[in-house]
Amino acid sequence: MKAVAQLNKDYIPTLEIDNGKLVKNPEAPSRLEGVEIFVKNNFECVNPKEYPLNYLYNIHPKWYVKHVENLSKNAKNEYLPEVFLKDRILDSGTPITKKTYNAAINAYYTVMTGVNLDSKYVYILTRPPGHHATSNFAGGYCFFNNAAIAAKYLQSTFQERICILDVDFHHGNGTQEIFYEDPQITYISIHGTPEKFFPWISGYRDEVGKDNGKGTNFNFPLDEGITWEEYKVVLEIALEIIEKISPLKLIVSLGFDTHLKDPMGYFNLVDEDYKKMGKLLKKLDIPIIFIQEGGYDKYANTNAAINLFSTFKEGENA
Ligand code: OKP
Ligand code: ZN
Image (cartoon, protein in one colour):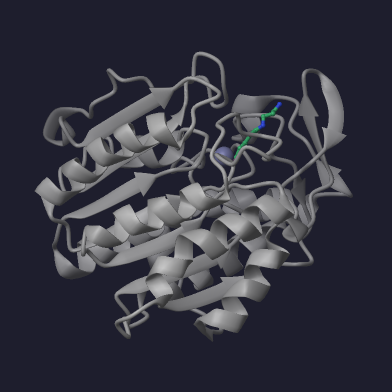
């Protein structure tokens, strides 16, 4: 197992609006600092390298990247949108600071470094997260869609099928939208039902893909309070789909906000459940690239990571 980490510790959004009130923004580097220590002590960990931006432009048009850059460079203190469509930010949980653009670009470098590592299992530990960003809208703390960039890079380089399994508590509306008509990239998500939880607008069962991509999008919305017994049944269905497709690589959009202790997610998985999740993923015997998404309790995140990855450390020198 190899890893690449870049937590952008100078990028600390402080605010978001929740229920009409300014509240503390939980998407801070501290949430992943325990995970980073674990990774550095246990995996071969490389430094991110710079890459040209063309693989970013395969997902996000140049004008959108420039737009994020401009909002960021012009930000005084912290910018929260007032007119969503004009600002191309979906929600009030995605403030922009002077450091936002650099952090999102650094995350891109980290993703590109990770997808080019020579190892059966790779962990890309970075932030800001990506799965809520569409090709031309930011949202849910996300600006550039890290998992989509990785998937598109692999698919176009190797002309092979790629699967994305999104286990963050929140539906990855951005990733779904980006690949909705793409027959080569399958998106599968297990998440809190959008009837009750962010991002509200998508993540329903009947969203199955469109045109050539019909049948390559799978949503498994679940109620709050789900424990491993119930989660496992759905995860096994998702893994059967992946097995059938037999992709060149599996990308896991990895959110730890499914943990009982997480303040933003409402499932009830506990530490040991992530070990079981890891075992099921490893049984697939398909190369996996894990990309960090959510997870907002520092201790829950650390314990989830230790348990999940314990299986991948053992045995073979993959
Ligand atoms: C990001 B990820 C806005 C509150 C909504 C957004 C949650 C974003 C989760 N008023 N909070 O998928 O972990
Ligand atoms: Zn989430």
